[in-house]
View 1 (cartoon, rainbow, N blue to C red):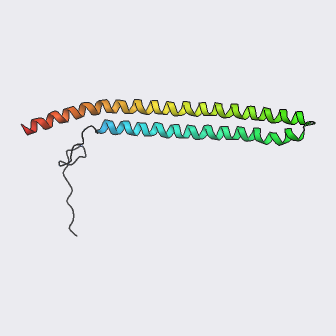
View 2: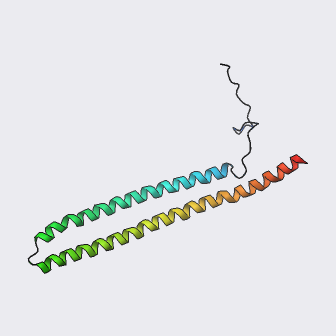
Length: 137
């Protein structure tokens, strides 16, 4: 097998024969990397929130059998169950709101990071089109 010769580069790591990719330059890649980091941070925050919520709900759920065992009448039993059910519904609704806020914040943050890159990418694309038009002339 023949040994491959290293390609000459322009000093920036790109080969002289590299095909330009309109709209995807370094700043766009940087924006994507920042957006990915933002998504990862949000993913960790969601996991942390869900673990916190699950632990709290388990504590509530484990108290239920003891409360039911202490009931003296059918009315007490219904009251304990109703209180547990009301609390569970409220907790799940609040948790849904917290998770929606986390996700909404991630979407906004990711969009903001990518928008900064796409603005620069649009300028780079226009510049590339202009330069390629000059080559044809």
